Length: 328
Image (cartoon, rainbow, N blue to C red; front, side, top):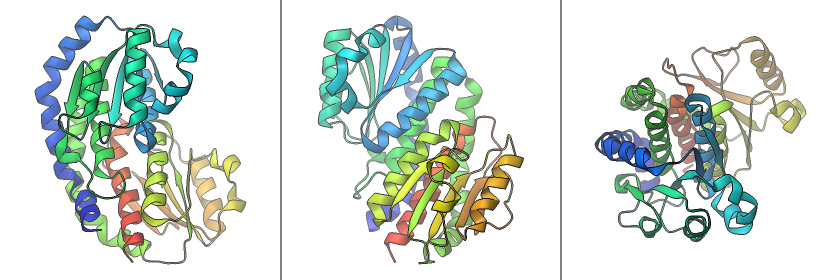
């Protein structure tokens, strides 16, 4: 578990490297955008990485005014004919941990051949196989996971997607805010690690529900996969209020840990729902700008204009809870 610990608790360092790397690549990427002639963007990946793609799709549609979709590489392998009309004129942004996932390589080769797509790929391996099926390959070897499940690779691939969205939409403020938030992540880790460990070491919880909305929804799914992989504890994800229908307060009890990213846009409905969950005996960890009375732990997030930039703090928190639970 030593590698896992270093990758989780040192990911702020790899994020700084990735941001600097993207600054150096920005002009080449923008030039590629200019000559590619695409009018939509498709995000793809495998497993937990594909969950990041769902977040990236929504982020682009919210900011760029451009058609976008996300689809798993495995779905493209099995069902490409269904997607061909949607893939004409698209640029694919493919995210990968290893750069050699079979489904991803096959789907990119096939979409390039049959739909003429242009492809930007990003992986954490240098000279990975994916470079042979992409027009641009962004390499993040410092973000590679040596441990058994994705940790720092997720936060770094998430950063690359957001940075690309900033370039696509001309949102300089988004790109600048990425740096501000990731520069502050080390302090967030130092200030909150002991409290996160205390929650993790409470053996009363036996399942996890991770709640997040909007651009962070895909990260909730990725976090649930990390919890299951590291701990073997059952974990689910949902938008906050939709969890009432997906699970309902009757699903939670004193053996449930709820991790919720609390929206700064609205207090009444989500607070009422969190109180319902607290009333079932569930242990609640919140991340947001304000504290929730009755939570086992409130983690205060930095003020942001782009809520997607909370993703780094969110991913770290879930990974750290899973690590401490697994290391007990």
